[in-house]
Image 1 (spheres, each protein chain N blue to C red):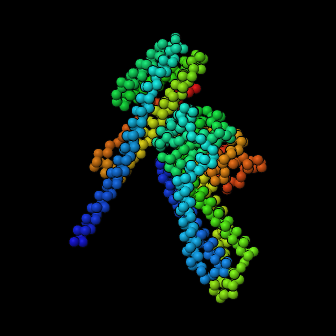
Image 2 (image 1 turned 60 degrees about the vertical axis):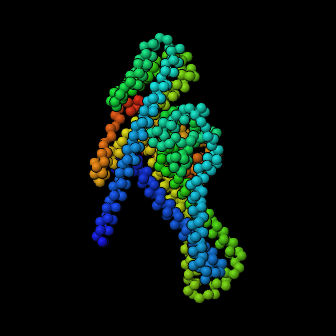
Image 3 (image 1 turned 45 degrees about the horizontal axis):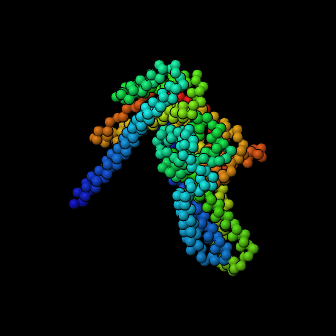
Length: 329
Length: 184
């Protein structure tokens, strides 16, 4: 962790992480509510009901808030299970793979967190992920492809990275963020559809156009704000999400080394992960953040270039390896 | 009447403040003590694994009686040790003899291929790592606790309620840091 004062501990970083998460979540929540209000108002005005502007604003905000709360609760309590099911992970016990279990147990001791559940994904692709809203509900999953390719030290590096995500509360944050971003994208999408549909079947809305100039300006302002929000909000939300996700990958790498005190392990594993091109089934855009390396990266690689750097979930592997080398000095 | 209430209010706020710091320090101390007892759990686990290992090796490496005996002796010394310093020394010696044992197993291919031996080796490797990691974790929590009782105003409250500094579990040398691994 170069660039940080020497007395900053990982506990401080975790605290800072949590604080940042709260700020970002509140920001996202506000964005959802404002968006809900603006879209409802725009649709009302567009439909010809300019006099119902204020009730529409309030109703839109309330509906958006309720939906956001329900979605977040669902992702908080049910998200982990859904992701494990989606990825096709099966729980295993110690007799199945004693070494894997031992390694996870060792690192849980080092991190001072309860032993997470261990899952195996039957897939030749090389990847691993962690899930669980807090350390008490943690779970780690690894593909059979990666499991067979790694030495004990490399396995420890990967698992330490995953346990760091659990310990840093990155998972809870990533899942809530994904939910909010999903909601924003969905709301804007719905808004454009209504607008599109409205312009074809524009019944009733003409009647409002004949009103006084004052309401004409209000309608114009509402429409401009709503359209701007509908364009900017999804992009902004995604940008924030991807930027934060990349930062946390670096932090999880550093946290892994803090646990194992052996950067070579994770470096070796990252090199093997970079060398493989098998894409992972059962991973998608929503869950990509949770994996140790981006499971979808190969799709972009096939076209001869990596995905544009702003929308990358993970920092480039060579950059992560370089930072790990820096930790050894 | 009003000054009385103001004074009472200040006293109540002060009391809540002292209690919250006291609780925070106590939580830290409990965490550190828990980490300390985790080390013990792993040490005991190692004692339990060794007789099995010695039995398995005996069947193959008949000419290595000396090494086997030194492992058994080191185990007994570690079990009998008392006090942090003596304990640490005995454990280090045990780690050394175990490493010797695993090194000599290299020259016995049959032993190395034995399923039981491979299992024991994995378990002992893991237990050595767990000992190392639980020490590391204990030192982290002890450092956090020591820092918490040293800063103002916590140090005043720590002094009032006898919160003493905690010792670190020191390792003998730097090589020891990477040592808790018998894998090859």
